[in-house]
Image (cartoon, rainbow, N blue to C red; front, side):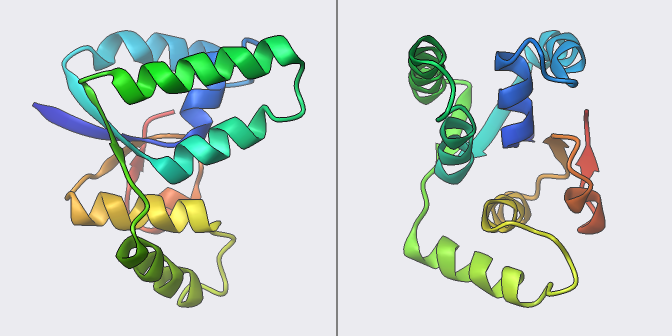
Length: 135
């Protein structure tokens, strides 16, 4: 079964109907039925942080969605280990000319380690590292 990495941008777009990528994310969602999805704890932290200043209803909504992600057998959430953090820090250090966040670096290291080439995002940083973005 095909595996695809899921970046924060995709989770935000699915959740926020006002997001510019919402409709595209919803249309892609249907095509993912036969895919395994892989994301990281760092991505989920970034997702929750994105909505931290929203109202209490939206905060509760994203907590519920995060719990659903964690419980979904077709979604693997990769934990942030010390080794993963250090590998990501090395990538971050070696790309001073890029605008990669540490979450981007963690995601890219996980993708490399899992031989994943496709990512649900519109973040051009992933194309700079040779990955294919799907939004």
